[in-house]
Image (cartoon, rainbow, N blue to C red):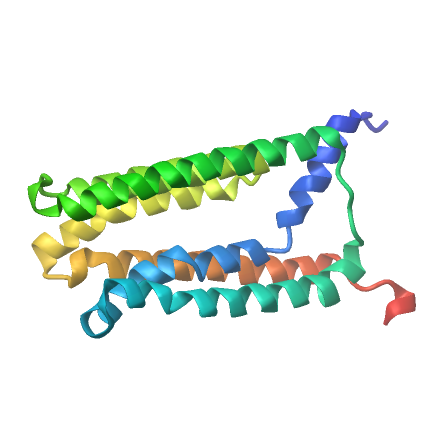
Length: 209
């Protein structure tokens, strides 16, 4: 005998299915960890600003590809979902929370940039790690996306591990290319494997084949 579930639980499961195709993992893997892995090499010739700005069109291209895949590959398999008022309110809270969080991070970043020489050794790395952990954990909570907790923890651990590699193993750029390149690979690979499983578990309806 099956156990009935509440409407709230049903909607939560449907909402979680938004991330079941793994495409958000791919997009996140192509965003900040890839930038932190490649950006330090680009900054030597392009400067700090352009070495970051150059990733914007790349992210736009990745997002466009994911949007097209969702529209033409994912949607025909699971359809489109309209969420209720509770879920929409939760998403609005998430948007506001992340906006405030990003403004605070931006201000702290400016302060760090102007007072970089006076900061304690390892201070910027600790702040970056804590920022990534809080950001990912907040998103995981509001979006019911548990994998983000793991990514946040890995990202937070990446900064001290990278610094250790820099201090003890001679890794370049405070170890960022190694630790965040690895994190980007893990996230992208996880997303691709999840996407393949999604396609296997959700074949096209017979009439659409």
